[in-house]
Every structure is written in structure tokens, then in C-alpha cells.
Amino acid sequence: MPKILLTGAGGQLGSVLIPYLREKYGIENVIATDLKPLKNASGPSDVLDVLDYEGVKSIIQKYEIDQIYHLAAILSAKGEQDPRFTWKVNMDGLLNILEISRELGIEKVFNPSSIAVFGSKTQKENTPQNPILIPETIYGMSKEAGENWTNYYYQKYGLDVRSIRYPGLIGYNSLPGGGTTDYAVEIFHDAINKGKYTCFLNSDTVLPMMYMQDAMRATVELMEAPIEDIKIRTSYNLAAMSFSPEQIFLEIKKYLPKFKIKYKADFRDEIAKSWVESVDDSAARKDWGWKETYDLPRMVKDMIYNLRIEPHSSSD
Ligand code: NAD
Ligand code: AKB
Image (cartoon, rainbow, N blue to C red):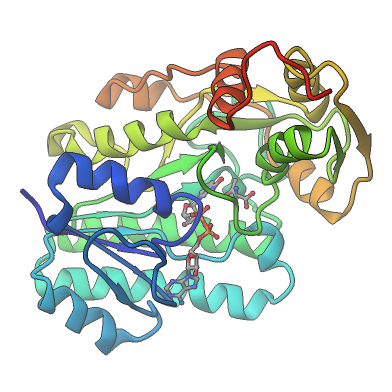
């Protein structure tokens, strides 16, 4: 069994990926780290700031790590509040991970990228794997630069770094941490708890999204694929579904008929409009057999079920 280190493990993705990986590789083999001690760690965990080069190195040595899932980052909306700090965390954090991995002979590294690498000059629909990439947020800029760094470390040093351009991730057992796609999680909680939601995107702003179960499975499938199948070392496009706030609202309304929505778009709608509506992920399908299992109706049904609402009941 590989010994796996997760950075930024307390976030939306990490907090669900830890139990998923522990189920597969064993509790003691998955080490969860974040800036602060993790609540309910349920296994080995430690405090780690990815900007602390020596700290990263000593954790890797202490736990005899073989693989790293580098999740620590500042996301798109939060990133705009302090661009230079966001660049520092996202870039220096990644460079520390890559350089230490090279130095210590780490077997594999996972570095998530994002649809935030796309910009308004990118083809909006069925976006190809290698389109024009001129991102317009500091987060997107750091992810795009990170893709080139991981490709460089693979080409130059043979470091086995793998990556996915995740769409917006939606799950029921963790909350998002400052992104533009956060509305697609918030909407469920407000629909169930308050019966109404004020959306920070416009009603017709379409974005690519993915259910968390699919995202976790994709991540492990990518990491377990034979090395010769991994043809793209920047980051793979990955798709599951695309929808607007109005479309997800109407789908949720099938279960909660009195649910109401208002639109009060803010700067996050501008960010979303600079991204794309759907991506062509044929390379991931061909190279390592990616296939999604959740579309919009199935995801909404599962979210509502897991948020403890009986399907087809209403909030009144
Ligand atoms: P999140 O914001 O929920 O969590 C990020 C975690 O990183 C937080 O727990 C935070 O404490 C930690 N962190 C921040 N600075 C750190 C530092 N200096 N050292 C150590 N930890 C630090 O993010 P997430 O949604 O879990 O995203 C995980 C990864 O997946 C990120 O790289 C993100 O870019 C990528 N991604 C996520 C989504 C999504 O929709 N959630 C979509 C595309 C890509
Ligand atoms: C964000 O909205 O910033 C993230 C992402 C798509 O990378 N969820």
C-alpha cells in the first residue's frame, strides 16, 4: 500500500477524499494535513503549511510518504481579495511540493487544476484540451502556470505528476471554500433550511460541474492508471454536466415545490462568464477510461436524499 500525504486536507475536496482514500489504502496510510489541526481527523493527521519548505520535507520523511495529493490552494473568489498572497500560496506551495518530491524521489504527485485556467478568449462550448489559455483571475493564472510547472517536472526530471481540470465540485458532506461555483452547493443548503436562496450568479450563467463521487473516483482512477496511459502532463479536461443557476433551481424545485430563488449577481458572475460552458474531455476518456455517472437530475436527487430530505417531499 502506498503512503499518501494530502495537503489542504481540511477543504471541500480533502475532507471527503481522506475517508475515500483511507477506505481504499488503509487508515494509517493516508496522512491528512492542513494549516490548522483537523477536527475529527479519524486517522493520522498533522499541521502543515505548504509554504514551509523544511516543514513539508520533514513531514514527508517522518511518515515515509510515497504519493502526494497537493490540494492546498486559495480558490477563485477568495483569491481576488489578495492576488499577491494567492499567487504565493498557489505557486510557491506547488513549487515546494514539486521540488521536494523530485529531491526525495516521491513516486506520484496529484496536482488539481481547474476550469479557471480558461478565459474569455477560450472557445466556450466543448472547449478542447489545448485551447487559448488566458485566465482572468489570479487563481486561474496560478493554476495555468502550475500546469506548465507540472509538465516541466515530468519532462525534465521524470516526476510522475498527474492532474485534472476539475469543474465546480458539488457534494453533500463538505462546504466549499471561496470559489465561484460555490453557489451550486449553497443552493441545496438554503433550499432545505430556508426554502429560498439568493444567487450570486445570473440566472443564465452556465458552468461545467461534477458530483463529488465522480470527482473522487476520477482522481483515484487517474492516479492508478498505468504510467504509459498518461499522455497529458499539463492537466486533463474532465466533464460530467453543465447547467445554469435557473436549471439547477428548477431541478431542486421538483423535490421542494415551494423553493424560491432571487438573483443578485456580484463580481463572481464576471469570473464565471470568463470561464467556459462545457469541455471536451475525450482525451481523459480515451487515455484512462474516464466516464461520469452523475448528470444533473441524478446529482440533485442524491444531494437531496443525503441532506436527509425524502425524495419528492416539499419543504412546507
Ligand atoms: P478549499 O478552499 O475548500 O480547501 C483548501 C484548503 O487548503 C483549506 O483547508 C486551507 O486551509 C488549505 N490551505 C490554504 N493555504 C494553505 C497553506 N499555505 N498550507 C496548507 N494548507 C493550506 O479548496 P477545495 O475545494 O478543497 O480544493 C482543493 C483543490 O482542488 C484546490 O487545489 C482547488 O484549486 C482544486 N479545485 C477545486 C474545485 C472545487 O470545486 N472545489 C474545482 C477545481 C479545482
Ligand atoms: C472555484 O470556483 O474557484 C473552484 C474551481 C472551479 O476551481 N470551484
